[in-house]
Figure 1 (cartoon, rainbow, N blue to C red):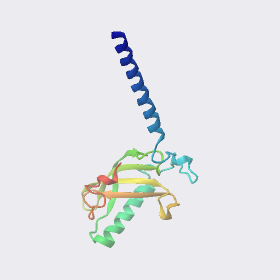
Figure 2: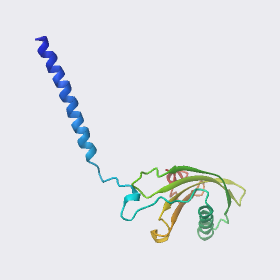
Figure 3: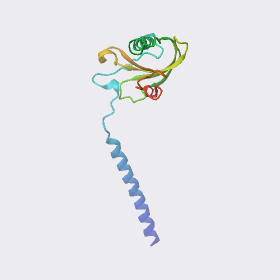
Figure 4: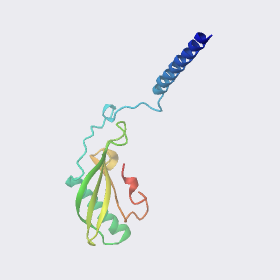
Length: 157
């Protein structure tokens, strides 16, 4: 009788393990969408992004920040330069999304204050989506409409 009980236990353990394996394989095949790397698509992305400290990137942030402060807020604030520029993420959303580089820097403002700027550089996110790269940025303490709230956290990976 003891031998029969041992065989039943062993059989049930083996069959349970086999059932778990089949379920794991089956669930792995069922995905919400296929994960195709952005470089392998019909209209592919080459992940050719400028560095965080590239002059074209920081000058774009400076100019668009100055325009927004002049036209909408009439504050007279402008960014004089950048310091401590660091990359904090690269393609952190996954390989099947538009390539993005996430950065953070200290902006030297004309009111003699240092403010943290969080920004992302995305491929083909320029004007009309075809020309070069796009830059989305947020200056901590100056996100008046709370678009990247709290404190520019949503502009980071």
